[in-house]
Amino acid sequence: MLKLFLLPLLAVALLLVPFAFTAKKIKTGKSPRGAFIGNLCTFAGIMLTAIIVPMGNFVSAASEEGAAAALSTGAGLGYLAAALAVGLSCIGSGIAVAAGAPAAIGATSEDPKNFVKALIFVVLGEGIALYGLLISILIISGIGA
Image 1 (cartoon, rainbow, N blue to C red):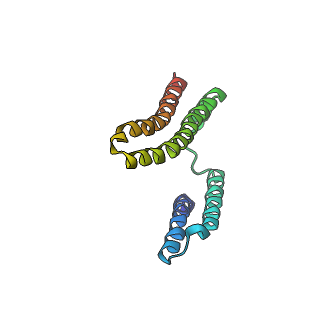
Image 2 (cartoon, rainbow, N blue to C red):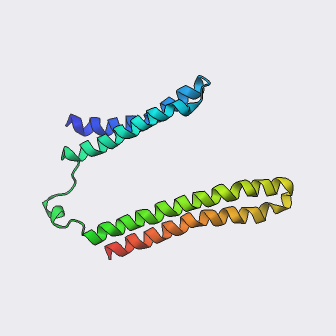
Image 3 (cartoon, rainbow, N blue to C red):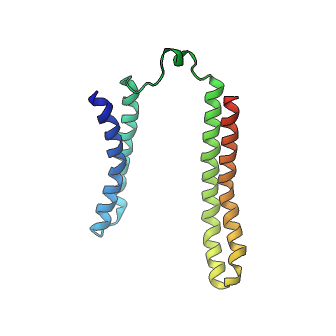
């Protein structure tokens, strides 16, 4: 029963460690680049915890009836497709906003009347992520049907 409490607590603690490394570096006036190794070690610890927790067989919410009604391969691929739709659209949106926002700021600093025109291009980039989210919602709603 102690594992039931300690392993998730360990995962939360490992999630907070990178912030501690970065805050310590910034507080001492050093560059936070050195905290990168700590972040990698923390990530490895979180992944190891994610592997160990299911092996303990105490987080399984599936009962015998639930095991019989396990997800099919098609449903699993549907969830994977929904995750890819959101993830890849967010990456594309980030690339679009990274290219459009500095240009919009530069155009606005030269002539303030260009603000609305420039803002439209930034919003179009962010719309890509919303389309990906909409597609994933449609995929997930189609899985249950």
